[in-house]
Image 1 (cartoon, rainbow, N blue to C red):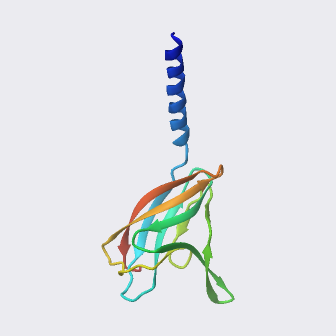
Image 2 (tube, helix red, strand yellow):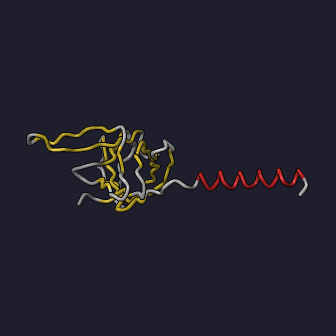
Image 3 (spheres, helix red, strand yellow):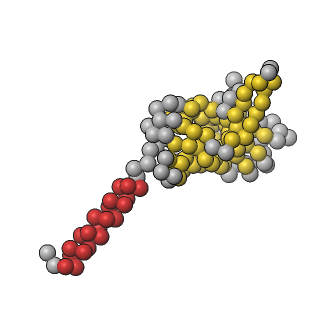
Length: 148
């Protein structure tokens, strides 16, 4: 094999290997996703989804064009008082679904110019970090629904 062809073959093999390694991240499964409908003048809204992954990942960021800010929040009952806390990250353990639902974990939406109306579709980008520190993003469209 001529030297130039040999080098070209190695180069192509390296590119293919890098592409394969780049696709080796775990896809996070997102189900039961929805945004709670809001009213005019309401300053916050919430979105919910169940996250599951075959490997340990951490939700590190979420955004939507419909809101200026999206934060991850937890809600817990302490001494008969419901406490809400902002979270920097949300761990998603391998094989254990994490449910974001009313009264618990959720995505809190701020700074939205118009209310979320039943029947609308809202696009989100969620960013996940794996154990190696690699960040991948996934898109999801959530329907707007009335509170159950």
